[in-house]
Image (tube, rainbow, N blue to C red; front, side, top):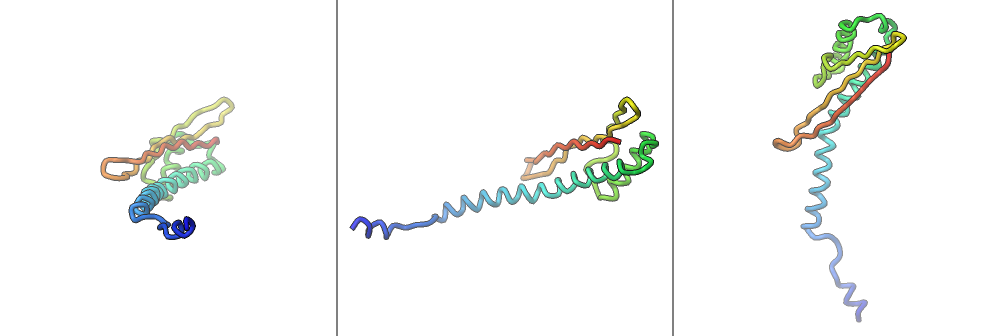
Amino acid sequence: MIKQALKHQQQGMTAIGWLIVLSVVAFFALIVMRMVPVVMTNLNVETALETLAEDEDVRSYSKKELRNRIQKRLDTYGVEVVTSKELIIELHKGGSRTLKMNYEHRVPFASNIFIVAVFEESVEI
């Protein structure tokens, strides 16, 4: 008799349970949709720095020329969040240099709530 009574109990999620699950899934889907362009922009900045470092004559470029070249590459990749003004050029002993780009990318999430991603890319030339 007890087994028969347990068979008739309702199983599964209620409408409120489904609503909560779908809300959580939608929340994380929105975050992913907002962050994909941010990550792609960072990949473009990283690629711009790496292609500049692979240039054969990069060691002979002045600071101004380095900034001009990186800006051209950023423009080519369609990067508007960061400019050559954020380029930091560090000189090392022996003549080597490190090019760094430190920037943050703010994406509106909802109303006045933003997602902030901070990036620090560097390459040695």
